[in-house]
Amino acid sequence: MLSPGSTIGILGGGQLGRMLAVAAAQLGYKVHVYAPDAESVAAEVTAHHTQAAWDDEPRLAGFAAACDIVTFEFENVPVDTVRFLSGHVAVHPGGKPLEIAQDRLTEKSFVADLGGRTAPFAAVPTRAALDSALTAIGTPAILKTVRMGYDGKGQARIAAPADADAAWEAIGGQPAILEGFVAFDHEFSVIMVRGIDGETRFWDSSANVHEGGILAVSSLPPPSIVLDQQPAARAMMAAIGDALDYVGVLTGEFFATDAGPVFNEMAPRVHNSGHWTIEGAVTSQFENHIRAVAGLPLGDTAVPLLPVTMHNLIGAQIEKIPALLADGAAHVHHYGKTEVRDGRKLGHVTWVGASPR
Image (cartoon, rainbow, N blue to C red):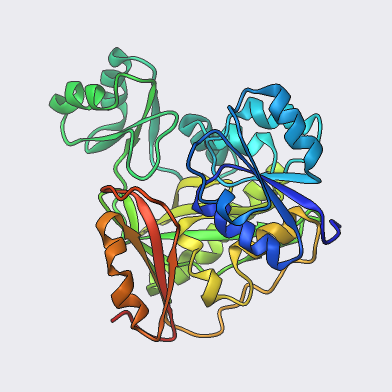
């Protein structure tokens, strides 16, 4: 169990790191952020900040020496960085979940091997392989880069085989995975926290609405089909957590279909669709992640009051904040980012026990 006053290192300097740092401070911990970016909204609320490249081993070694444990706020931290740090300090959840989550093909295969239901998929290492994959999977389908895609990036829809050339060009001719189209009623998340001792707790699943491939709204209670499929999806995520001996918050995104929950992807971190937990749950995903990696007892994940609705503030939507602050039921979060551009998540707002106005 990590004593108050200890230092928790966070790899990554975005808004997730910022909210993790606030949660850590509430539990009496200091935070040291390591990120290569010039702008670090996480570092603005932390005691220490190292700006250096992911492969700068002397700086990484100094960072490790200054921390009692290390975690990360996003899944594209290089695995080699985590492996290097793991030789100097405890890192939770560790390199293996990153290795899986960073490769869509590995991720799908890993979940399928555990008995999870996924969309039909095929590896597409080359343009020629795309034709073979389309023959096997059929259309419509989605072509995704194997690595580094998120919020709708690195993806192209293929409505018919004639779209193959355009889709391949759209993803930059990178190694890819072709996924068969899944007919679904709703998208939903399963967010869990797993402690060092293996104890696992779940938050209630939110129904998620994406616009342009970016999460726009998460809301509870979800439709009945999601509630009906929540136990099976939770069992899948628990199996993933156990297989990885996971420590911290782990998120799975699912499609609710007539055949049951279909696994889409996982994120080995706190998740945008769980931001509502700050005000909407007894213990937020951020606090419980800190509790887990610090070896503390996990907090209650119950939702005391419904409905709960979280809206992302994307791009110019951040300009709505003055009006939102006039709404006494709105809990407003501004991430402190200076550049406003289309598709950039700049804040969010949550309503608990009330509907958005």
